Length: 292
Ligand code: GUN
Image (cartoon, rainbow, N blue to C red; front, side, top):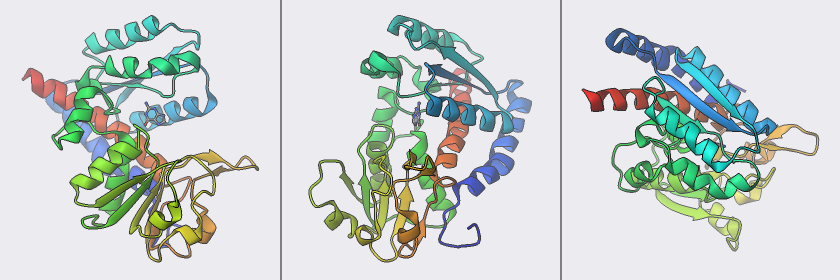
């Protein structure tokens, strides 16, 4: 698979980044500041997918030379307990980046914004706080959400310039669709966000030079929905009927038509995790430069 030049290999790039970018940067930081950036993750409840995501983030952080601490809170935690945990880490100089794994379980989901908004913006490695969202909207420097940032990094690595491309994003989530639309717009793509209520979706997707699916439905994007030679980015992480991990894109048929395509697994997922590491390093530097 890696030898097919049409496959955008996020796994390979994330490994490369650990060896050639993250570890050397962390080494330099240790020498210059006498401190090691530390990622703090908060996992509430015991959702099995969330547990895997958090452990992947911790593993890549450690491999990059960062310190990692995970706070596991029970699913019956109160909102106050979660906010207290975030505030404690906001005030703790040893924690460089804070990530509360989403979604929160049960009724806590209704208070997700309050929890996210309580994170110190300089430690907000998910780039979801009001200040970082505003910076993104205004195209000012700031911490950016990891999945869109990872997608842009992957495209850049393969020398794919999005300027002037007709980009269609399927999915309007706060974590992916909306921030990605702004980031592509800032890079001069012509950007459309489609979603579950969009009428005649295929009419839009067949016009896309760059098609990104983040809708969370297995085999949702089929070959007739894809323009010949399009760049197809699959953000979906779904289980099919046989329990196998698959994306939103019917890979086997779309790969025949696409100019470039990301696989699942091994495409966008590892890039998201890599950008958590990148943002933790960036957060450390933001905090230390602010003090200087
Ligand atoms: N759940 C799924 N993706 C993400 C992510 O990028 N950040 C957080 N905090 N939770 C997630």
